Length: 136
Image (cartoon, rainbow, N blue to C red):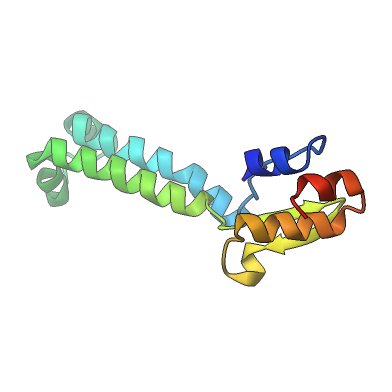
């Protein structure tokens, strides 16, 4: 879409930004990598970690995780990345022209088509130079 807008309206600046998620989601997304590293560390070095924490024998769940090291580590990595991606995603897609909101995916629950977006922007720009380039 950026290329289409720059071609249709030469001279405008198209700025793409990620909409930040809510604070609780941002904080949780920062915790996920620590949990991933913790699980991987426990699987790899649990026999040394648990005695230092005061447990003479590791808990039973540790032996289940350790029985399939590769599966545990791969699952932890993949699921952690999936959860982190979900927490960082907002689904926001908004188009502003001269600080006016033209289109919002959050309000419309859909993405705009290229022609629709071009028409919405051209209606906000009074310059005939832009109208000629938009194919109107």
